[in-house]
Length: 609
Image 1 (cartoon, one colour):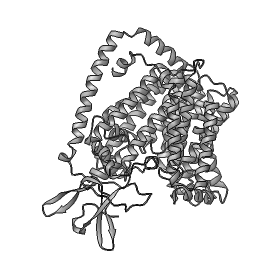
Image 2: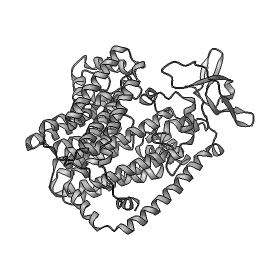
Image 3: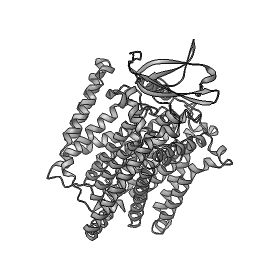
Image 4: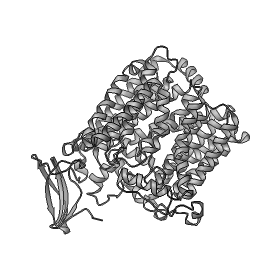
């Protein structure tokens, strides 16, 4: 109802497009702000890359966007790794180029009106998520806030939530701009380039499996970027003969095998987007067949169990989408409904003792996700803020987890954006799947079948992993969500008809009611988060417990804070105030450490590994 209400207001996108220079200025600012953190030679090389990419993006915006998408696998190491922040800057540049193109009067490509509304609602829900993040925002007094700390933030930092929120808005905006331009494009060469999103990392993984030395070379690449590489044996050890050149599972351009598979799955709908501009039918069939075989092969040699499940879901849905009989029946709809219900039910299995062994470590992660969601259930505690609240609240409850993620997309959204964000994302997914069903029923085959099956694989993988950890994956996610609606002409026609039939008076009334509800819910969410201390003990402005030669200690950060100790009568909250911080941390550490507090081993609530 809220979406329909807001849809009655005129949403004009041209003024926003004319502000492209603000995005370009932000890219220039962030580019120059990191100069102090890299040697001059590397920094000037970095500026050269950004400058060349800017020239391409403003000369041919779709080409620049295609390069950003197809080369996203090169930024597959975890946030905080060397050079990983370049992707965010290039995303700003590419978005600026597309906005400039959209702002021209002669440009016929427009974003469908409903998607400008969806973008507006997403921005609103993202901002409202921080109404429940009082202590997250306040904690910045204890951290360094130079741009580099946001660009390289790890998931336990408060910076990370802000960074992912802004990146999410940028990715969604870029996806809508890029796809609306793609809809008018008839370029086979650009489409072939876009298929590199999937085939580049998959091809490198294939070489890694069959050519000795490629894996070791890629290990050096990962160590250079991150300082380490996570090589793990395959869960399907009996299939080791499929990768004769490797002792462990392949990682390709990613620091571990799981994110290799996650990126491949996220790139599947983009293959469908590319096929919409490829005309030779034999070429389209060949690309679809090779991609399906490569995905199955990679899922077997990596041995990532969730990746194998997602691959099988993709292949099953692809068969349904390509089958003339099943495609025109209710099979696609019921397949999507069954998959959606199954994905939504999996996190709740953590509350059934008989199912916890099946979930393994994820059982505790899921339970943690629900606990964090209940801290601020309406709008959440800040986009992708589980790591921060895990480190702030769950630590004092003795329920802290090693990972800064719930490893579940539903809980990721619930804990970060609350029930409002969950309902919004559910609406987007349901609408996207329905459009895919209509597109399939219209008689087209390869492109919509690939996009629909890829979306199903994304949903399946989302039951066991989050989707917004890597920026390349986050961008692929929004491209997959927006592609069917923007590329399907049937959707555009139905949208125009619906727009003509809606009444303005009802829209203004519903819009006013929606605004009142949002203001009240936002106030309740803020009040709830402001009084969090009354319900929970909080590790506020306190670093992790450290072991030294003299014993144990807590680093206390600048500003007001509190930590928790074990006392004779249970846990005790110890408040502190540090107003004169000393510069005792180096450049890589984002914390402003004021002093250290000694802790007796028997008093420590936190458990050291």
